[in-house]
Length: 436
Image (cartoon, rainbow, N blue to C red; front, side, top):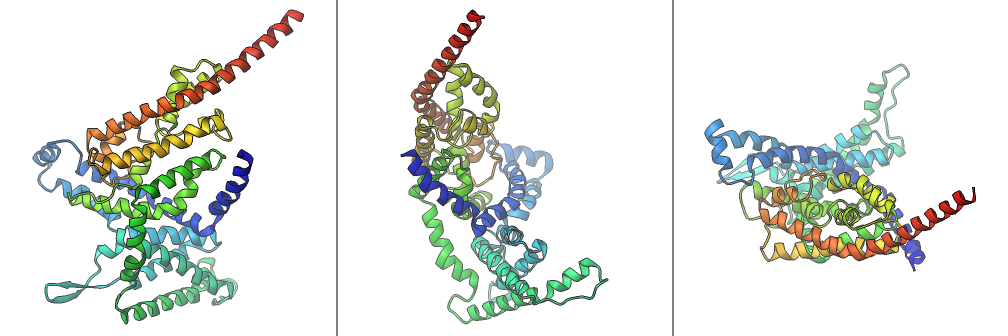
């Protein structure tokens, strides 16, 4: 059965992982993720979940201290759509073998061409760009523009629609002229698109994509069944040696990103947090110690198990495991192609997802605030920081203990098997020495 499952799943996972569009979406978001994490710290400091925090710093630094930190976080969070367009177009152009900088620059211009440039203030219409269109609500527009603009750019280059400069011209100058006609094609195409949509009831491409695609996808992604499927597939793929989140994030990451940004905006404005199933929810309340929630497994290995193989591996892997790095367990225990460990490895993250989703739905634990903590932030601390409540830490502790209980009988079976093998090897060694 395992071989059959491998034959079915491996080709699908490989195909998804190698798909240039999905890979570029993943890589593009990874380009801007460090910026989001760094500026999240400024947002967290400005809104730290301790009573009296704001009043304390206002007394020391004055009433404008929070604005200083907000200026840093807003520099990224108010432009995530634009930044996403840049990152994805850069990654997609690079994966297509193009000059990534040139292609991504054209994608940014295309995004701005389609961005509404007038605002109604009272009874007056003024020329301005609202960050509403450049931020989280513009992410899906940014994705489409990034992919389409790069494809148009590539289309022109493949047909050699370029201006060739004579030999002896510096390479930088020659490359800029090579990009001239392809860039003109892309810009003209999006210029026409803007005109066409201005003649429709949607008025702008932004309104069309948000109404027809982004809003419905947010509703689908912001559901317990969707997130359960995400974690089930990610865990299942790990059991076959495939980095599961790498595959599942290619599909779900854009949706989680938008939901996270919605919560972040609400958190900044001190409004009710609208969504449960954000990226911090996935990172912080479904797996502890990495895929399969293996921190629970490591604790059992160190406290209960007796075989040298399991205990030594537990000692080596516990510190990385606390910080979410579990490759030593995945490939050292191993988890890969191990039917005994595969069962709890898949069950526990799925169960954690169900429990966390329900308790947040019932209001027992606050929703995650949208701040992207580093994925290496240890449990208990991350639960408190991501929700602003001690109940987040309690939920994490409960799920880690539950994981210990579920992992226990399975790792004991494996431990007993390894213990027998070690005793047999030791007996053979004694026999060999006695013969000498």
